[in-house]
Length: 339
Image 1 (cartoon, rainbow, N blue to C red):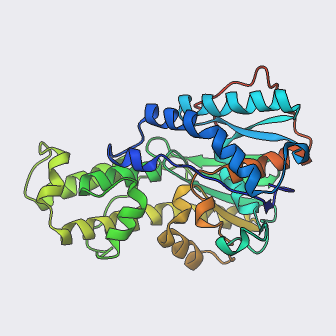
Image 2 (image 1 turned 45 degrees about the horizontal axis):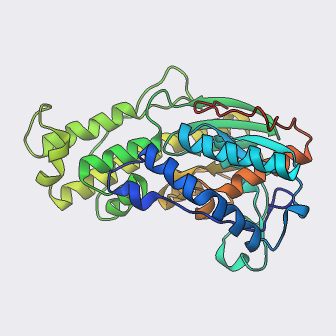
Image 3 (image 1 turned 90 degrees about the vertical axis):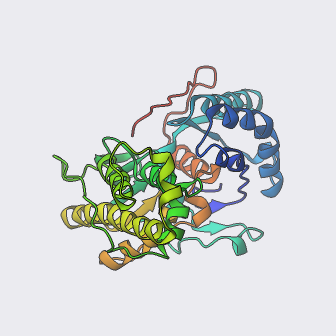
């Protein structure tokens, strides 16, 4: 990454295919995959960027939040490289980095045809809706490294809720894109699902709505709450699955869009960004575009899900704005790191 906004290379090696079999991420499989592939991926990224270590000013790495094994491998690799290459090291908050994917507005000539990037970078103050498998947050950024957390989920994140609903409906992992695909066949008004009411107007909860889907599915096949969730998919018709998927998706999207619009009205930011894996949802993008009075420039879909480009982008801004570098001999992982 150059200057925090120009993408020189992006190499992603995913172990997703191995996790699909188990219906979710298996930490040990993820960590073993990291060990096998981290060095080849780093080397390929340098080749793709047509650069060498002599041209590198600094190294950025995710220190948290995330899976301990995967974080540990990444941090140890970055620490080692920082020491032997004598480069500054920046430990990056993975969740904050999702926001910085929206600051990537240019790509090297060899990459440009493959990416649909925002035409302009966000202008502060920025309201960020961060939605992923592990996080649902509303954050107001007044400037780089000057932000306030307005609200967050107290239980399931929206992406996690989509994964659990997908399991109930017998849809593959990851849940978000598969529920969205199934929802296209259904009626979003078929069922009215509850929205959690929180003491803080900007906080979220998706545990209740997820359980409501479970009870709805049991009701649809004429069973009570004792009927096991893993047997529901075999009893539900495809029409029932589609209507439940559409109704849940509508309820979940309405929840995050309602609160985003409420925050927009209160704080009147100059830009709104959507970050995290769920930001790739076309249904969410359409709902926000329909409801907000300002245009949103979305990050490329491939830069919404976890990637190193967003980590490098935030690392660039940390370096440019002279944020304190990490000690390469002491940087530790923080699996439960908060913003």
